Every structure is written in C-alpha cells, then in structure tokens.
Amino acid sequence: MTDLLFNLQIDCESTQFALQNPELGERAIRGLGEMLAETKTKGTFLVIPGDSAAHARIYEDLASAGHEIGLHYHPWIEGRSEFLGFEGPEAQRELLSEGIDRHAQAMGVRPLAFCPGYGSANDSTFGVLEELGFTHGLVSIPTRDLPQCACVWGSSPLDPHYPHRYNKSLVGDVNFVDLPPTIDPQSRMWGGAHPQDLRVELVDAKNHFYTIDKAVRRQLRDQTPLVQVHAVTHNIFEFNDPKNFRRETYFGIVEATRKIAERENLTFRGVTLAEMAERYRMEVPHQSGQTQELVLDVSGRAFAKS
Ligand SMILES: [Zn+2]
Image (tube, rainbow, N blue to C red; front, side, top):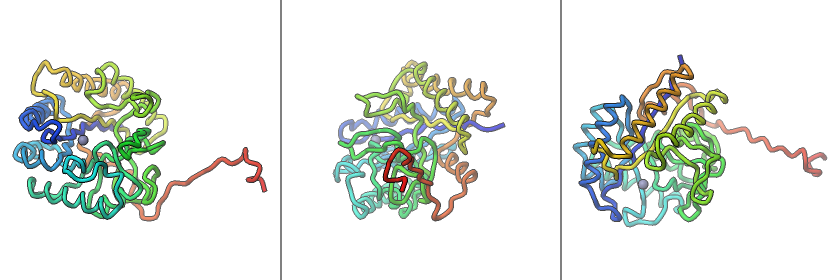
C-alpha cells in the first residue's frame, strides 16, 4: 500500500523584534511537542537564530523525540537587508553562513533544512543553499506573487522536486529537495497574491479539508513520486492551551488527512521533512545535469511554421 506522508513545519520566530516574546515561543513549542505526540505526527521546527539560542534545550528534547530542527532566516530580523530574494549570491552566502554558524553554536549541529522568511528567493538561492550544505527545505511557495517581498513564484512545481540552477521556478539538478507547502492554487487570497495554503492559522479545519482533499486527489491523478501533505504554522500561538483554536485546527487537519488516506487506501505516516526528502531521493535519484523539458506550443504562430 502506498504511503501518504504528512508533515507539520513550524517556523519559529518568537524572539524577533516585532514579537519579543520568547515565553510565548516556549509555551508554543512545548504545546506542539504534546500535540505531535498525541496525533502521532512529526514536526520540522525551522528556527531563527534568536529562538535557537533561547530554546536550545527544548529543541534538543524535541529532536530526541524524533522531530527535526533546521534554520529559518529573515535577514531583516537579523538587522540585515530586508529580503533574501533581493540579494545577490555573495550576500546570500554571507547572510546564511552567519545564520548557520549561530544555529550550530546554539544547537551543536549544522542545520540541513532551510526555509527563508516570506518565501523570498531568487534565481541564485538554490545554488547557494546547495553550496552551504543544505539538503532540503521549504523555499518555493507556488503561485505566491509578492514582489514587495522579492517573492514571485509563478507556476513553480506544486510537489517535491530538485530545483533548477538558474531559474528558481523550474525543475533542475540542484542537489536540494524543495518541499513546497500544500496549497490550493485556484483559491486565491490577499487580492489574488497568495494561494490558500495549509497554514494552520489561516482558516478552520473544515476549510483545510478541501485543500488537503484536492491536493491528494491531484497527486494520485498525476501519479506523483510521493503522495504528501505539508502543513505549516508558527510558534506564536498558545498551543499548550487545550482549548486553543489553532490547536483544535491542527487536530482537525490530521484527522482529515487520516480520513482521506483511509478513503484512498493509503497508509498515513507522520514524517519530518528530512524523511520526506529522503523518500523523494529514493523515488527520484538525483542526477547532475537533469533539467525539465520545456515544451512551447508555437503552433498558433505564423513564424514558427517556416
Ligand atoms: Zn518567518
């Protein structure tokens, strides 16, 4: 029986200066630890350097419980430039190297998973991530169109893939598995700039059901290498409170995904993003030089006939 892989990614940024609430961050990640245990699911905590310094011990406990810890990075939080996708390769390399060093200092290990703030990236980003030793993460947010955050993804792949070296929205041979969040590309928000995604805090569980259902049906129809659901949240909610609405929403998301898995005769498996990327690498072995075949339909153009 095929597996349905499920992950919750938590972007952790409770110490950033707009919030400055590490106590809330701590309650949130402790609450999430309980929720993940209760639902038998796994979390990937992607953490800004300020949060890893503040909560290193708790992250170590979460890692021993089978969860994954990686790097989340907003240049503006670090008092550097605004957005990663606005910078050239040298500046990106420098910013992220500093982030890696601070993470390693707090956690004792280099991060392998990465997510940039706002999904901000450009055509240099994936090559830089590969060079710095990152192996996987959430970088693209397909169809998100926020030029003001240097985040313009267009019709980038909806599913896990190796990105292109020179064009961030295409499939290519960068040795980094990009794992986009689960989205419904047809449901638009923010005046059309953002797709409805599986961000726990975005809508209620009933609404999320349709996003999950649509995404799973599409993957089965397209026979994608993995069948997967990738939910996202932040460590800024009172997840430790049993009556918290976001907590209930997460339980609802897991229940919905389990039901859909059962209906489709798939085995539900809670995994980290590292495990999801590993499964992708098994299904689609990485090969240098592989690129997406671009097929342009020019049949309607007179000049193409000659
Ligand atoms: Zn963030």
